Image (cartoon, rainbow over all chains, first blue to last red; front, side, top):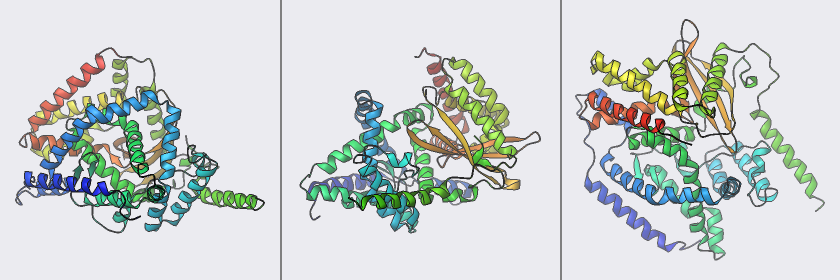
Amino acid sequence: MTARRPSHSTAARIAGSIIALGLLAGCATPPPDSDPEAVAEWEQVNDPLEPMNREIFAFNDFLDTYAIRPAAEGYRTVVPQFGRDRIHDALQNLKSPLVFANDLLQGEPDRAVQTFFRAAFNTTFGLLGFIDIATEAGIPAHEEDFGQTLAVWGVGEGPYLVLPLFGPSNPRDAFGTAVEWYGDPVDIVMVNMGYEWAPWARSGVSGLDRRERLIDTLDDVKRTSLDYYASLRSLYRQNRASEIANGHDRSPLTPAPSSSGAAVR
Amino acid sequence: MISRRPFLLAALGGISLLVAPLRFAAADTAPIDPAIVFVNRLADTAMQTMVGKGVPDSERAARFRTLFTTEVDLAEIGRRVLGRYWRSATPEQQQDFLRLFEDIVVLTWSTRFKDYGGDLRHTVIGLVDDGERGLTVTSRVERDRQQPITLQWRLKRTEGGFRVVDLIVEGSSMAVTYQSEYASVIRANGDRIDGLLSALRNKVADLQSSSAAPRN
């Protein structure tokens, strides 16, 4: 548990200095108070670091176009759908200790129990998680992360932030990601067993899996939007808000009152 | 080894208890709300149009345009998307914008699931009637081998029935996303609406030429 991933602090320091440089590069100028509608829009967009974010975004987009997306395309070509599904299921299963912890920290015992049984079934009958039989059995998967937990605890998101390589984020979610990087139970076990490379390999495959699943969606957003940056910013923030609410914002909608919504196809 | 079986049974029992409240009673045969009928019909038509293989792109776009102009209140969505800039726009700019916005929406959505050969199953799972403020129908789209997608259809009442005023996909509202994007384009063009209009014009030309190009 101690002093694992020493090289990561270097990475953190580099990331830190990139952000510091970006801050020096300048913030966007807020609109004057005399224009309340513009001020409201400014606050709603929540992107005071836009000039810096756009530069990091351009860097990420370059990296994505020439390295990450081609790698994901290669993965799609080489590994058939069946294999990719098995890898995805296994990765999801490896995340269950983290999801379970976050379920508990968010005070969602029902979801924690679901996560627990999912992991129990998939790890055993699902052959180490490679086959997600729990979903077939009627326990759907859900995702949680520490950023969401912090949000549930009332921590504000802070300004929109584009992280190098990691993409859209904010200080709260970036902190959550860092905590999970150091605190992932599966990774800690692997490192303590002497497999120092395992967390890195896992991160690499996870990244590939995630990017492959997003190829079509991101291609489509990029192709059809006028401002790819602004579209992704809005989509990220809305999607995040909805993940944090776990659909509770829709609670008045379910289940269909009086009428038989569920029975309708 | 012997103790394994009871454990398994208990676990299965525990799971069915967990799962039971997630399943809605399907036996209910009360009359179906007209808003749900409307959404089901619209979703079926839209998915048939999108997934339909072998349909030429121009035909697909034409069908989508009909669907959008009859069932979706694009003018109202367009006004909301332009937000505070709508009032400062001249009537010609407003008309220009609505025409271009319609083109963009049709071109974007008619090709969205074009290459998706699989099955899409749409099920309504909830309805909230906010009276004056319209209705929200929640539904789920299941796809082969993928996580289901949650959709929320924001509807308003009209004389003949309903019209769609927003579609929220996995928590992301179409209107809010366009609004945020277009405001950003307008700001980047020195707060000029004409800047947005010419960007839209270029994008429409782009999308038209790429969908006209032979594919498959």
